[in-house]
Image (cartoon, rainbow, N blue to C red; front, side, top):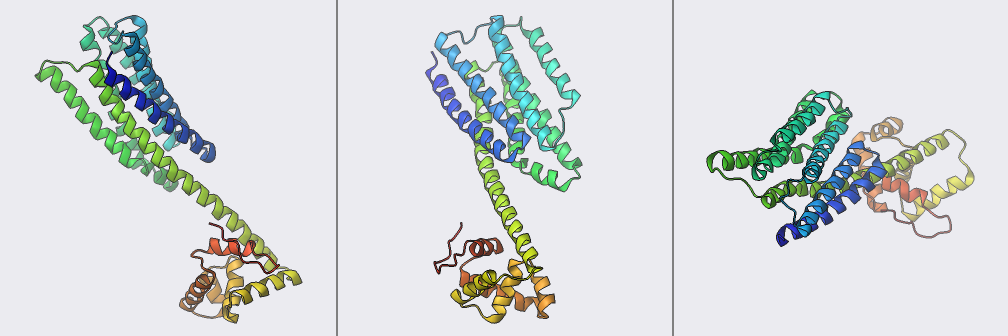
Length: 328
């Protein structure tokens, strides 16, 4: 039993599982369809690695039984399919009919070569896989160039690095396999094929772990900003109504606690109502540079760096004289 192959695929299962978990969690938070398909692809990769480990344990690694060949082909097709679904979902499109034709061609070629020597037949899996990746990567770059929607282009451009890595890796692997077949008259062992194919997918899974963490941070920041903007709108509405005595008292207590000047207190009320620096400048008839100076002074006294933090401080202020609650 090839011990190295089994251990390698066991580690792969753990990494794929971690990637599957974070992709599923991020999809639940953001509802981005490409992350759902990424999770499904990781599940297919887990099944593939478990399948290889099972073959090693039962010692039928190079069997040409129809069931073994069919299972290997199905897993390869599943990984190719979900990769294309990811790219299509990034651009909010459906899978093109031409892609289904590609899958049919792969099945037909595997059927025609099923009677060839098993060592030669096993080369079809990586060749089909890497050729499909080349086509999918080409589709990505073409769609990126043709994309006219700024938001979709920005989201899709996040994949440029990993797509370029997959493109270069696929080209190198195809050249390596063809060189072995045509020049050296040798074929790659199945263990080596698994090693190279899984390595590329492992890079993709690790990339998704990092990518999803960034997406979760951005999503959390966006939710916080939405909450803050809602508070801005509420304060802006209050500005149009007579100010309750308790609310005026809260302002006064706030200004006194942080030793704000009258001008800073005036600017702060406008900030809390959602006014921009330019709008404050127009309302108070002072230069924008002067407004920025006062805003910087306010931020320094309150020990904040953004307007959202300032708003969160104010909304968490307690009237009983306790200190402000910092929200990070």
